Length: 553
Image (cartoon, rainbow, N blue to C red; front, side):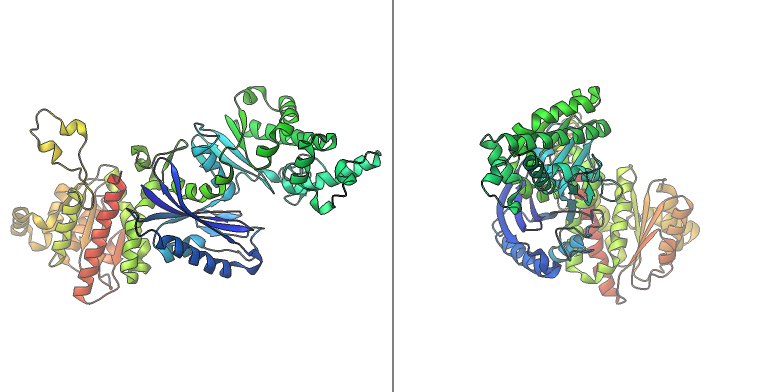
């Protein structure tokens, strides 16, 4: 069970959602607040944090802790950097690093996604697009957007602008949407429909036809989707005719998307859900005329099915997808495939990573080096390599401890495969074994060290073992408080000459090791005891991160 906090940020309201996620999403709590977008970012940020704090205070009795935070928000935005750029419906939200702000405040990984993409993930996982590998989700609301699922993955494009199909021009003139007359958004969205009602009303009056809403003195500011639906539901022929025009425009738009993306399913939300019976006849007629037949025959067009839950689930699904909890549109947070997904691994282990930074804020400036060291070790173990550790004096303890925690269960039980455990040559030993990440502390090889010292001198004891044990793909980690331990330096030189990756863990100055290693963490301390303490915490955290990556199923 994972506990995820979601923020659904819109121009009118924002919602804070707490959900428990396993093979389904169970919303535990939801609090909605008015966005007050005209007041800028800072005021709504403070209010959001107050609500989040209140929601998290209720988690005391839950059997777990907050796993991550997901944010769905209108674009443009940069989902990779976690920055809201400048949405039209959120004035003052310019270059807001909302992911970093959330991670700094709450100490768990956070993720940001364009709302259309997040809605696509929801319908793909638990809605009308479930079971597809190629799906388009169409937001047919105030605006017109698209989320693209291709070959079982969300496609966001070079800078998160994939799916901005509302900008495509369908006609030389017409209602304005996305700043362009005759665009798909102008012809098919709520904004465009209001304009279309006004223009069609004028045409009817010019032909001496007085539509019902004019006879009823409906003011022009109420020319909208809701009004048009009310009159169509009551059988008004003029309202039904306008819906037919919109259906034709929608059909032309969908024909372009079917030809371009070749989806097996198009899921359309918002207006289409309510007005499908008025839109579909003309939509299908235009599709038959415009789309490539083979592609059209392979595609099914359906209304969205998650209804009012869509916004709540969107932010939760943002975090689920980013962490690999979705496989081919299914929630599956425990599967081996999810664990094999690089995004899942490199995000899920942030729980331990952020815990270290929260306990030792002085290490915050080293976050890139710590994360980089983790990734080097992860890649090493993933490709079948091993870790060789060396250090002298007090650092010997860190080498021995780290090797022990990697070779055995640390925070998790790591049972071996049932096939191996049941091997007939074993007599019960199989159930006692644990999966291991291969690591050798060179400080624990006294006879080899003695032989090397006799033959080449004590400075070569680690270097000889690196040469004898190391193979391409392996990693050598040298630990030295001063960064100038000669035995460690020589071992790193040999490792580099042999083509091994080299890591260093030192005190503040870094010493000679700093310039030798591919990545070196120089802890911000010069006092030996404090350096030793920080080294131990970093080593333990790296063990926890790697264990979570490979064995937290």
